[in-house]
Every structure is written in structure tokens, then in C-alpha cells.
Length: 183
Image 1 (cartoon, rainbow, N blue to C red):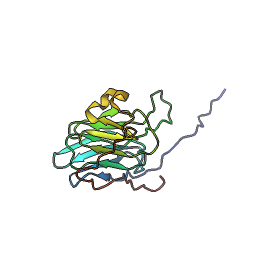
Image 2: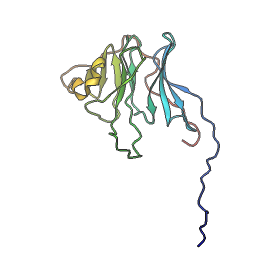
Image 3: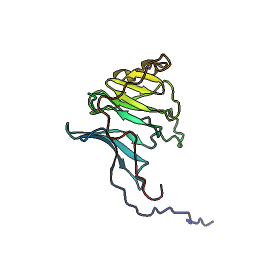
């Protein structure tokens, strides 16, 4: 009996990885950028925070999908930062929990940690003012986000409170990633 070695062989076409791009500017020195890992500029990339004045360049997380919503980081903020709400790519079914999450830093962006909001209500805005983060009617202290759902005052706006305005508005209020061909 003769076996045939006639299998299908996949050959990937060569491609160019697009350059990094700034996708959100807090001020002249601080911004978030997307660093593509493959041929597409706005998916399958690293999400990076840069603070040129402090010499910080840190990877926040893997970038697959940022939920499109208003995003405000008070440019007068201190050591507290929060990423936009990120929805991970869950197509592979790898057995991990697939929940929307924030990444937060309480050390000027040197290190990042995962936090999950108590309720995810679509495309609501995210605001960081002082040491508080506001999302979908909820408020939490950035430093408490590691406590999970217990960090959140889920009825903050329902109690008649308002989200405070930033002391110094950021340069951008939304993420903007310019897609490459084929995306």
C-alpha cells in the first residue's frame, strides 16, 4: 500500500506590520498608543501607555477591541489612570472568563492591573477624575479596583450624584485608531 503525501500546505503571504499610532492623548506628554503585532493596525496589537515627562513606556494589555464610548482622563490627574473598557477577543473558547474589563494604574502608569466593573451597560462613557473612576452610573476609587465588584458604588448616579468635570480637560475624548487595509 502506498501513502500519498499530498496534503494542503498553507503559505502565508508576506506582509508589513503597520507602525505604532497614538490613539488617545491626555496631554502633550501622556498618551496611549496601539503597537500592531501583525498586518492590521487596530486589532491584535499591544496597548501601550507613554508618559514622556516621566520616562514611562508600559504595556497595558493586549489590544483586540476597545468598546467605542466617550473616554475622559483628567489631565490634572495624579498617579491614577484607567484604560478604556476593553472587550477581549473570546472567539477561541480557551476556557477563560471573557468579561469586559478596565486596566488601572495607581503609580503614574508604571504598572497595570485588571479591574472589572460591577455592571457593563453597553457603550457608556468612562471618566477618571482625581482618584475616582466613573462608568455606567457607577463610581469606584481607582486604588480599590483590585477588590472587584465590591469596589463599585453601583447606584452612584441614581443617588442624585453627578460625574465631576475634569479640572483640566484631556486633548482627546475618544479613542481613534486609523485602520489599515483589509481590517
